[in-house]
Image (tube, rainbow, N blue to C red; front, side, top):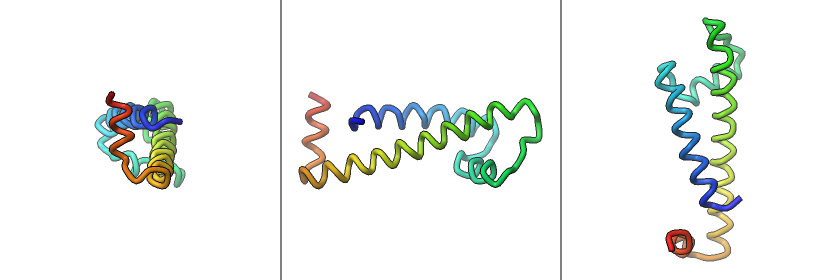
Length: 90
């Protein structure tokens, strides 16, 4: 996966996560910890939202890891990340 796509995915996921965070007044990390601990939604209508939210958060974490791996690889191959930015911005 290339850096530009990963960054775009992260921003898209941030937006989607923020919608759930505002709706349920809870940050995604806190929600996910409770969700993984087996906490059940108080309202049956929330079940689908919670499953989607958890999936988005897992994808967001995966993209964060991918981003870090790409940046590390770029740093090893070329000391300047700014060259990468220039090639994308050009």
